[in-house]
Image (tube, rainbow, N blue to C red; front, side, top):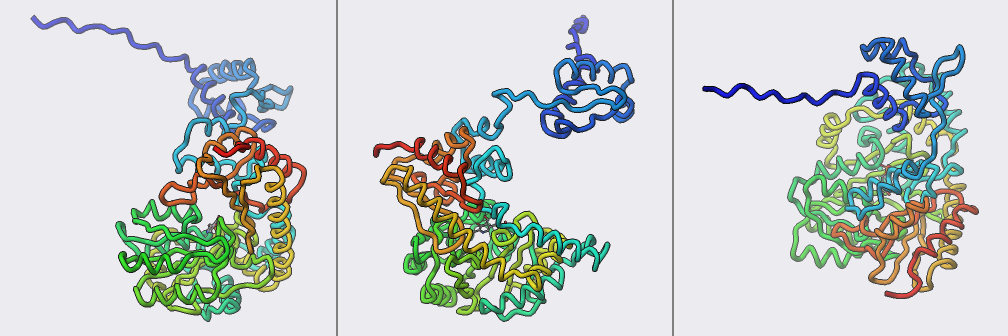
Length: 480
Ligand SMILES: Cc1ncc(COP(=O)(O)O)c(C=O)c1O
């Protein structure tokens, strides 16, 4: 005889009002409804969530009791100011308290970008005094007056012609003779680098990368399934071309990604003779040089070095305004050379539209907005900020700490003795409200843990000085 079915008790669901109040509390914690803002009315929530008025009223009563919202007579509900508790603030430092993998360290420090709770040594970006805010506001108004709704429509995939024309005039000054139609605009240099890699490599290919290298490039290379060979970078003269020449005797590479000018993180600049030697290697061995030149306009002595492309046709040149004008506008470009048709095709698939308004504003700034004057001003500021931060590090760190002297750009690379753990140091610093970048993220092989990078893109002041003093105290004062 078949067994009678077993009757099991169903787990009792939380009452509807409790479920709703938990969901709404979660949204308040996550910042969907910020402190002081108007909270949706009872009627609105009832309609949108398809629950009765009395369920919403019950949920709101609970949120009031818990201090999430407050009722104001005749005005409705408002989000109450947050109760600062140890487990809510700061979120990034809490998240970073366990040992982290490279990917999650990058995410944790990227999350601190723009967060005023952190002294932002991790973010290689221009600070408030560098970004020409009022100038850009003026140009934006002018662009809107002149172009109206057109400034808010899609761009053609290759980018706005006004920007490509302005870029073609500026690129002429660094030795690139390219017509506007030979330039493709991108969402920052990151997209340019991705397109250059996609056009010149396939998964499994070998590419030469710098050591140390910009971590964003290493992320792209990893994500595309490429194999890498690390080529050392000299703190003064950049990529060690002889080391690449030696590697090429044994290995064929598809591309070499290099920052010839004011390298991130070392601040080095390749002499012309080295750039020429690198170009000759590319011609001889048939690989592409992907030139990442985002810091090229930022020499501290005012001299702008020319592109490697003056020495070879095998160069894809990538740039952006992220370090010179404003990273949030996401305006970048690339000069694909022989890969123009393929990169235009890839761009049309990957991300066909850029920000039309951003492109028109940057075109206006480059052409008639005083970009050269702006550059002269910020080169001096960046040089001063680097010098002040460097001096503070030398004063507050143990005397075995070595700090580079960048020829341009605005990042410092600090080298500690072998055994120093920059990842643990970064986590300790985040807990003190200071962000910085551990050396490991600049290495394709996970080395360089005894180094770290400090960005000096923002004005140096009391807060910065105090932060460096705090970091100096966190560093071990005896050699391990
Ligand atoms: C060397 C280098 N290349 C590229 C980028 C990315 O630039 P963008 O913000 O224009 O994508 C950065 C940003 O930190 C960088 O340092």
